Amino acid sequence: MILEHERLKIGKLAIYAGPLATLAITPSLSFDPINPIKLLVISILGFTCLFALTRQLSWVRSQNFDKRSLYAVTFFLVQLILVFLLSGTNPLQEFYGASGRNIGFLAYFGLLCLFLATTLTANKHTLDFLVHSLLVTGAISVIYGLIQALNLDPANWLNRYNPVIGFLGNPDFQSAFLGIVAVISSGMLFKTDQSKLKRISLMSLAVFSLLVIQQTKALQGFMVFAIGLVSILLLHIYQRGKWVFLSFATSGSAILAFLAAFGSLDKGPLAKILHQNSVIYRGDYWHAGWKMSIEHPWFGVGLDSYGDWYRRSRTLAATLRRGPNITSDTAHNALLDFSANGGFPLLLAYLFFILLTVLSVVKIFKDRKLVDPVFIALVGGWIAFQSQSIISINQIGLTVWGWLFMGMIIGYGLNNSKIELTDKIPKIETKRRNKQSSSSSFISLLLVGGLVGFVTAFPNFVADSNFRAALASQEVKRVIDASKKWPQDSVRIARVVGALRENQLNNDALELAREGATKFPDFFGSWNELSQLTNATPAEIVLAKVQMKRLDPHNPDLK
Image (cartoon, rainbow, N blue to C red; front, side):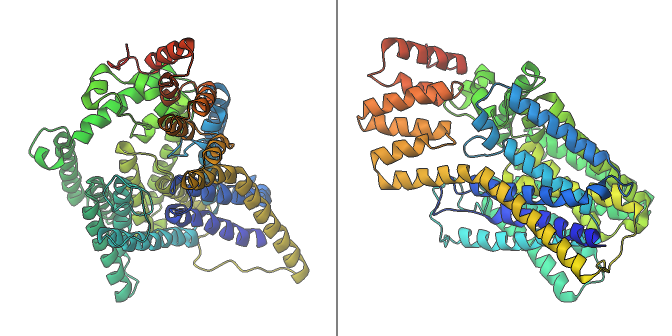
């Protein structure tokens, strides 16, 4: 019974990663105030859960749950390791992820650990806890979004977007996240055994979420909300056995989805509402991602390395459409990101997770005693997340919810249908001495796991924070030292080289530019900066231009 009680704690610990990774920001401390701190949270809690799960090995070997989730994790992890070792990209970039994203090996390893912990501990308690954690996080995000909309934000963001960016650094991410929040809060309204005050709170959260989405000026939040809400309604109709009504509702939804898809392509009656130039740009990103995928089918171009390959993979039309200097570091499609960065095996591994999630939903609806409004709301939220991931960026503070949703749905369906789901917290019946010994061992594992996660991710956070402090000091030596601090980053080095060049510190600039080009030969900015240095040798300048042409073959400015 002690281990069962510990599983409940592990499940809640994994779920805490959702709110913490979403809300964690360091605007006064870091050069990138969004992603390094979120990666640190994912790493700490991911390793903590992994170490804690080692006490559950005997239970894992039992027949209490379907082991397909373990096979999926193993498949994904093995391919992740192979990509890291064999893709040929800078290992530091692959491990910590590209600047401004940090979706590399460490991020996915942490997400896998959180997924596994959620899957193995899923029950009614953790299901409720996950949903309520999301709603609380959503409420905080709504409040902050309203503060930003009123131009009362206490943080001094260096933001070129709409000011309503929430805790995710971009209005599109804020819009999508609040769309998911509005879906789940609306779905929870179907739960009848709750007070009037709670129902009013849920309704208010949904309404204010939509209001903040409108303030972001990003349509994807409304799209996410519509898809998620329709999914919830269809699931409730199906659960009640209203087959005729379900047929009409499904047909109507399919027609609306068809019109919306055509409208986004500037066709049909919804074109004026839904069509945006960003749809065309996404087509360019998708085409480039697909080219990377088919040219590097086994290991991709390297984890979080889409940005280094975008210029050479885009078409001439994409190069000229917005100018050669407008680039992207993501395919704006999670599936293409997996295949482009990690090859088709990594994409198949992720699709295996999706398949298990769908199978779990089907299984639970066959066993109707497991279906309740909370579960249906979560499924609606997961569908909303998946719809967002098809057209937007894999942002670490947002994607953590997708992995937690998958883990909960898979674990709730494939595992817990074999055991009794009770509303009571499991009692612990054991001797005091054994209880204290077990508790001490469990806490020790939590602390060691957290320490490993902290030590692994903290250097990336420190390097980013030191870089910000160095720039603020305006001390040349300190800035150069900060750009060289391990783990090095291609963007930081190129930025410093450019600043040194503009201030006529050419000797320092040349030394750093050479280092950047050597360590990050596939980063266009490294060669671009080297080519502009007047004190570089003629051979270096020729080499830099050749490399720039290699990395950006359709750029008309490169002769």
